[in-house]
Image 1 (spheres, rainbow, N blue to C red):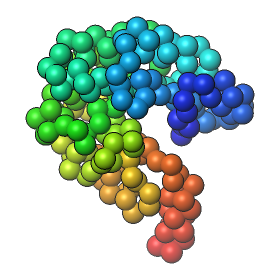
Image 2 (image 1 turned 90 degrees about the vertical axis):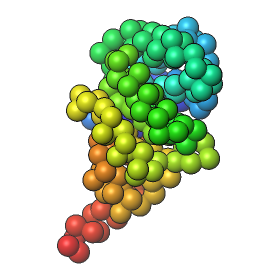
Image 3 (image 1 turned 60 degrees about the vertical axis):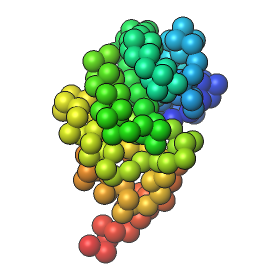
Length: 188
């Protein structure tokens, strides 16, 4: 569906994928989310202008854990405003959050206009967990989608995450997963 790249590579990805149906997503504030809001918003806006159609921004986890929820809300809201109708995915990095914090973070993401809540950057000590996807699906309205990311490396894992409520899978093993899926379909 989409290839996710650092902002520097958006122009190259845009050139290489021109004429295809493959979308470009760019990360913002990656991987810690501790970038100033103004920088995140400018980075997101420029990535869209250079060819990205989706943004994967990292929530400011330090601000969130410190209780500065107004900063977190403004951070998401300003990126949302700067990218217009482009898809916005907010990475909440579940491995650092309690269940109550995951619920609160998901609600903030929805209130501030996120199209997706994403489980992980893949850089933290834990990746996607089925129980996190189930919790997010229970918390979010059907209007907000879930992207499970981090450590998903097999077709079987991907299917389990989709069954748990994920709308998308973020993985660096996409080709392997697709090949396993094709093989599974031929056998079944």
